[in-house]
Each structure stands twice: as structure tokens, then as C-alpha cells.
Length: 330
Image 1 (cartoon, rainbow, N blue to C red):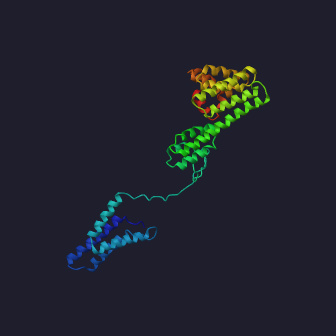
Image 2 (cartoon, helix red, strand yellow; image 1 turned 60 degrees about the vertical axis):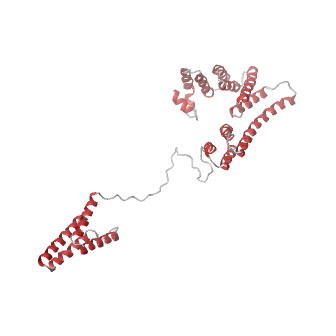
């Protein structure tokens, strides 16, 4: 049978005790009927809180003992006050029992980031943040050491940032790494000149001119030179590429390098001429097209930019960095 609501049962017990009390007052003594009603009120109140089985049985029994104590020692008023409290509690509604927390592993997704070891010294993309904000000089020093394993074009900006570090050891190590990379290319440049001198020929061979143009371009492309030294390096690239372009109808990369130098010098018209020459000599539009679009962009020719982007759009959608450009201009 469905158990009565606690407040109703306790109130019924209080009513039975009140009736028993009225009989005892009328008879000036507690009759057997009055005693039965009084005990019955206690039993009804206790039965409202004590289920036969189920979870929380010990807590229910302690609550039943409390109701019994109210009924025995505070007849009528005790059970009536307890019934009022229970009624107010029921109006607030039952509290939601919080479900136990369960830890689950995140499912592997195609676009999820690569797993990184929690004990790793550096997180992905955090090298610059460590150099800027880490208060520990040893940590910043390890970042500079880690830059030796990165590609030059990615690590040079970090190393130049480390040159501004307040700690001498960090600055000196960053300078040593930068100087070592620049010296490596300068050594290769000197080796090309020495080989030409050893052969006893006047001037450099066509291959030597191409090699020097590429090495000087590496100095500029990797960011190893700045200011007046950068200007000098770009002029050397233009000089050696011009020699090769005049000497042969091939070597499309030389015209391409000359066009990229013109872009860095903010000379889009000259860059466009060199890129057209590279196309004529055999470079595909997939390679030259983005730089032609950049030359048009420097001249603020939006229509020409869209035209050139459309010519290499199909092959560029899957290339890193170019997919976003294609989406914006087509």
C-alpha cells in the first residue's frame, strides 16, 4: 500500500493524540481508550517516516525515532509543529540528487590537435610566449636551444626576440645561433668564389652565378640580414640573376627570384615583368600566379588580383596558406 505523505501522517497522529488528550481531561485520568489513541498517534507518525525497505533505511529509522520522541514527550504540539515543518519542506519540492561524476575519455576526432606529452617542456606554439613572459632565465635559454632544431625562417624571429632578453646568457646564445647560420651561408658564398678562382677563369660560370643568386636570396629570405645589409643582399641577387637571364633562354628560377626581390623592394611593375618572363621560360602558373596577384595587390588592382587568383585557384585550394586567399578573392 502506498505510504502516506509524512506531513499528513504526522498531522493525523497529532489529531489522534489531541483527541486522546481531550478524553483524559474530561475523565481527569488517562483511560485505556485515551492511552490507545495517544500511542496510536505516535505509531502513525513514526510509520510515516519509516519504510519497510530500500535505500536510506537507517536515516528513515532515525527520523522515525525523532518523531516518536516528539509524540511521547510533546504530545499534540510536538507532532503538529513537526507536521508544519514537513509541509513547508514538501512545498519546496524534492531536492535533486546530484549524479556521480564520471570521467570519460574524449573520442578521437579527425580535426583534434596532436597529442602532446604533459611532461613536455614546451607546448605547441608557446615558444614566443615563453620568451616574452617566462620569469625563469633557464626556461628562456632552453627555448633558444630549441630554436636550433627549427627551420631558419621560423626560428629567426624568435632568436631576434631573444636578442632583447635582459639576461646576458640568453642574448649571447641567440646571437651565436644567428651568427652561425649567417656564417654558414657566407662560407658557401666564399666557396663558390674560391672554386672559380681556382679554375683560373675570368668571372663566374653560369652555374656559379645561379648559385650565388640563390645563396644571397637565402640570406634575405631567412631574415638573417636587415637594414643596409638587406639592401646590399637584394642588389646582389638582382645582379647575379640578371647575368644568368642575359646569358641563357632557360633558367626560369632566376627570373622568378628577381621578381620576388622586386616585390620586397616594393617595385610591383618590375616584379610583374620578371614573373611574366619566368612564365615564358617554363615555370607553371601554379608557382608564379600567387606572386603575380601580390604584385597587382601592391598596386591596388583588385580586378587583376581576382583574375590571377582564378588562374591558380584549383591547385591552390589545398596548399597551406593559399586556400584562405583563394576563398577571399574568388
